[in-house]
Amino acid sequence: MALIPLEDARAHVLDRCGVVAPGAVPLAGALGRVSAEVVVAGETVPPFDNSAMDGFAVRAADTAGAPVVLDVVDTVAAGASPTRPVGPGQAVRIMTGAPLPEGADAVVMVERTVARDGGRSVQIEVPVTSGTATRRAGDDVAAGDVVVGAGTVLRPGHLGVLASVGTAEVSVFPAPRVGVLSTGDELADASAPLRPGQIRDSNRPTLCALVAQAGFVAVDLGSVADDEAALAEAFRTAASGCDAVVTSGGVSMGDFDLVKVVLDRLGDMRWMQVAIKPAKPFAFGLVGGTPVFGLPGNPVSSMVSFELLARPALRKMAGFPQAAWSRPVIVGVAGEALRRQPDGKVHFVRVVASVDDDGRHQVRSAGGQGSHQLSAMATANALAVLADGDGVEAGAPVPVLLLDVG
Image (cartoon, rainbow, N blue to C red; front, top):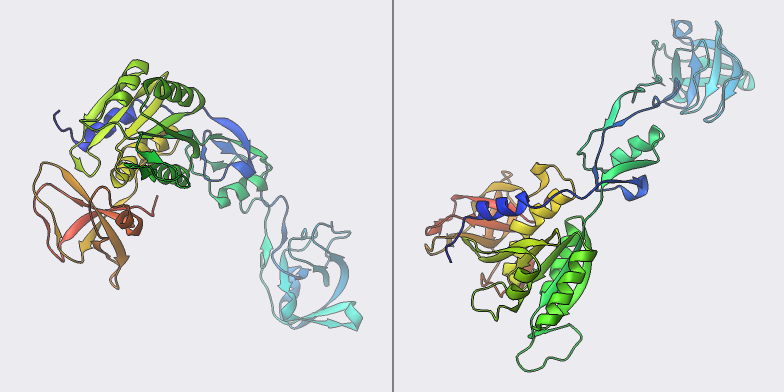
């Protein structure tokens, strides 16, 4: 089977993954989700002129020539309303956030005042100008302003703004439910005794974690033995109950092909050999309209395949803007020679990236680069992208995909 470029494999997947239908959720459930529509403020923020600090509301003109003494005619706490206006020669004791009394156009902070006559008057020690320490109605948001645009990834600040204009719920693209399934007779769960020829199933917990880290709901579907009927039932159930399915194992050339037989019967699948290392074998298709990602069984290959091919498609399904589908790629500096052999493939080398004193990402190998060596992948926080050839020398620039960003 001919190798295909990574870009072609990714384009094939992305073209066939649609966006999950949006729905309204309370603000408490909207963090990290993507807004599905424009939200327009129906209220102004703040809704009234108010004090920016504790102090005295005054007419700025009365403070000219300070120090001056003004009569204190009222006190306004936050949440209360003024009972009288501020006239010439008068002041009102006011707390942060309290409405500005009629007639007042400035606030003098309490630290620049001295109480007189038991609080019946106040000495203003500094002159202030109109607008000092006040917050005007609509200073932050005016009614009719767009507070959240469609396609916005909602952060805590967005939720605060939405709450401030009286928005209790917002339409978002929900987190896709992603079923994670392992296949193979050789797999044993972490707590089960190993029979001869078996290995622990590390892919499923790893992939569940990658799904959750990417912002989706991971549905652990367990592992299925190499049995045609059991595999068919597992894939049918997964496709009907999830928005997407991620499976590992059974996609390489030379396997017993039961996964291939079952998925070809259930859906429209494409079995690919991608021109990358690790993660060359990859399958993708639709089962009952549900995207199914077939990842390699080797642990590192499974993770790299998820990062390069499954994660961007799932992010698209979750409504993320295109710029946020993939992890960021920056230009780093090889802290040591990163060697490879020409083989017609792009190599993704597990590396540790650290920022040096000049702000550059220095990268060094995280350890063993075998597709079975998961411990090096656990240490790595980036993948150095090595084009076909002999690799790069120490000190040379190298593209780096950052695994802890995006």
